[in-house]
Length: 447
Image (cartoon, rainbow, N blue to C red; front, side, top):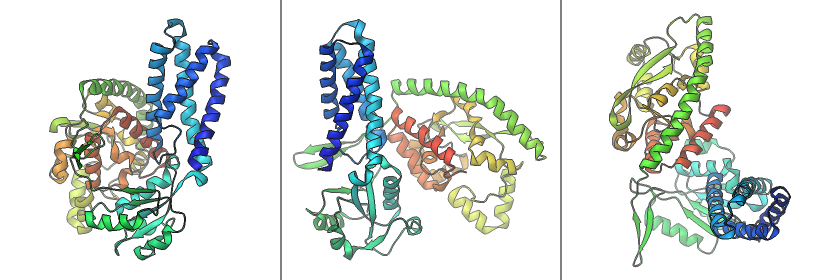
């Protein structure tokens, strides 16, 4: 019922807006009616008027495709007269923007009424991440009611998050009687038999059942599911950068590099002034050897945020304090690093210490978005992820910066960078840039 009301609401408001546009574009009425019908058909086919538990990025991608189909069909079949092309293009553009904004606004305003009441089975880090994504993304229309634990293990992060109650598995039957719309089974390490037992208990009790699978290197979002005479087969696929993708990515890098280098001038003057004011007269820049594309050595530029001879000081600290040594060898960083200067804390908190890497982007050593530029000594620790990570240029920002930044451990960073290589698209780059800017503004996971 609520899905029908959602669809009717979207359709009515979009028709009203489409009608309003008519007074500005000055197109023949018969043509305009044809365009309106075409728009509704395309949006129906793209499932714009259906409640789906997706993120806003998926909606933007879907509406962008709908806009392209609308324009192409209108140009070729509806009214092939060139002097109306710009007006038709304008109608499609404004309707696409309005559709995205309206969809998001309705989902936010009526989230309580439209959202799927969801239980998550599992209390590990994967379950917590699913819950956090659902909670932070209002567009997804997923309201987490709580977590159901299968065993005694509870992830520490989840234990500290008091927003969600944690239930025992024996309480599941009773919970399902309380208007639960959806259950997400977040047990990637569970066996097929264990998942079957759970799904049988859920059968016909909830409208939606989702399972978080155990991922491996063969499965990506570009993988294809085949029906092999009743057997389900998953074909491998790698999101490698093709020639066209590399071309557009490089164009974006050049534009970003030019803008970044121009901003670098006043920023350098400011950082130099702050350093001198605090009595630090050493050079404000330093370059460091890192692993580049195809495993080649590159030298990245950064603002110096640590004391001079920081590597030597680190060796001395690790020799004196076993706890520091263990922390650094595990995470490749120190949470409370005593080598960071007073100005360095500010630079890291705002991520301004990475800004000189726009020089590397302009040179072609790095990209605006890509894997983290790893240190040569970290090569062995990168383990099996090394081969996939070095197939991309390292980036100023990337998956790990956009998904927690310094809150993410070393192995998890490698997994995120491997994910980036295998699932790369220009759309993914845009999402990472947006999420990185948002993380920096709100100071989440700052270094």
